[in-house]
Image (tube, rainbow, N blue to C red; front, side, top):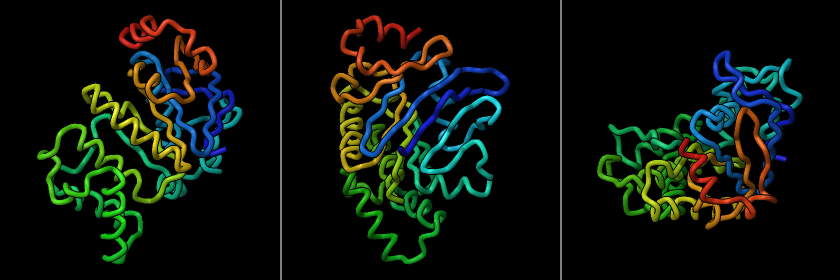
Length: 240
């Protein structure tokens, strides 16, 4: 199991936003987390890469990539994050440097030293996301969808076992959003666990996976019931 939480309580500051969370993700699994704004989706994802803390007195189990998040030391977090890919809604590219230099910056920061190795890895991930011809472009020369593809390429640099994506299609039109989730699904099929929050209910019908629903302070696995739920009602719920 790459991710496993049992009876985890998720806090944003002093506020309990999700109670008794059970969630797991295995190799090759595509996991969706849905729920309206403020329901705790982003906070949960942040605990997975230790942006938010979990507390032993309030959680039975929280493991990511074999690490116990309840007693992980600060100095161990960079090594954990190196095995993960993290994708944000707003891309978070460095706007003062090219696509190539955005990716080079990450590789150098995570210990890559040889120029040929760096160049080869950048070429590999850009080819994987269909952006080989944009290597020398600046982020402001790219569309939103292209920037998100670069963000995915960045997430792939260190061959992650887990990708955590927080609303990766939130700023994209439907067609571009579909292509991004198709790309994430393809990555999952190669063995990476992909956990993503989304408001985009139609995309789940298009690219099925495990579905967790955050509502009223609780998170529930609704995968089995998903096809029986009124999707219009579910879409409206995300907008509340």
